[in-house]
Length: 172
Image (cartoon, rainbow, N blue to C red):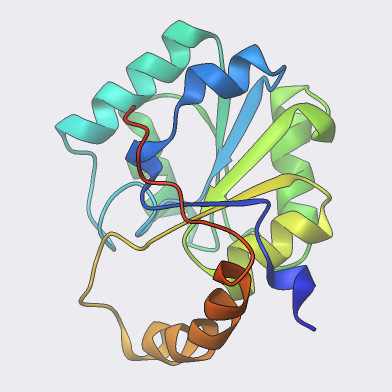
């Protein structure tokens, strides 16, 4: 039941992930959701996200944003870090994720997706057969339609956590 919504892994935060470990394991590309995964909803980069993208580039990762947002939001967010992006991705359909993989010119098997929502991010990455990492949302004040999704996500996360642990001890 609901296993298609289970992430490959679950971290407390994007900023708790040891990205060097994933590179050492052979991963070469990272697809990111933006809002509540990297920054609070509708916000731009902060010092922490800027440092993360510098670190990812230094490690050697190729990066792409995969977002259901319109292009102006995604492009403006991308302008500062200059990576690839897919807007109006249609998550949870696999198509947007596969576009991201193609833009990075890598294989799905060497790609990670990181997002904060089960019904769009994790379901979509799983549909695309990409290693999925769920992170807790950064912003506690969110739009009403996202609150409804969060309520539905709660029992699924609880089921997942009966057999898995949330990872929070690694710092980026």
